[in-house]
Image (cartoon, rainbow, N blue to C red; front, top):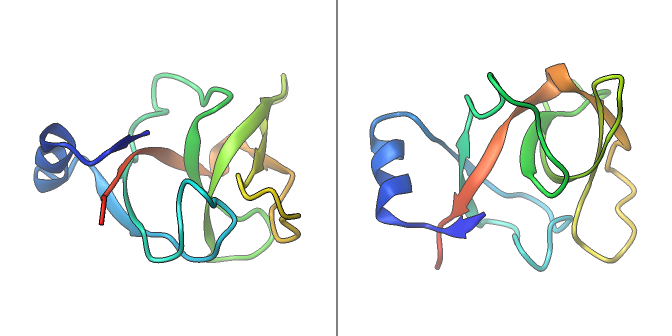
Length: 112
């Protein structure tokens, strides 16, 4: 993930990136509450998420909740272990998320 640049902003203006606001502190120190990120919702149409990718996903048990987490492990059965970067225990983070719940890849954040 990178700081915002003109290419990513141009893609956002063309509606090829979706803008999201971060809530919570599970991705500290990289992303803080109220940071804004751009997400490529088509990133995983032809490829699968990789370890290290920061993704936005639907929460597997809380309908309507979307989460931003890092891919920690990829399992053979299309399950992904997602976790926040915050070194404090992240009790609200689901451990395994099916591929179908991953919406896209975070491409950049807006610097403040």
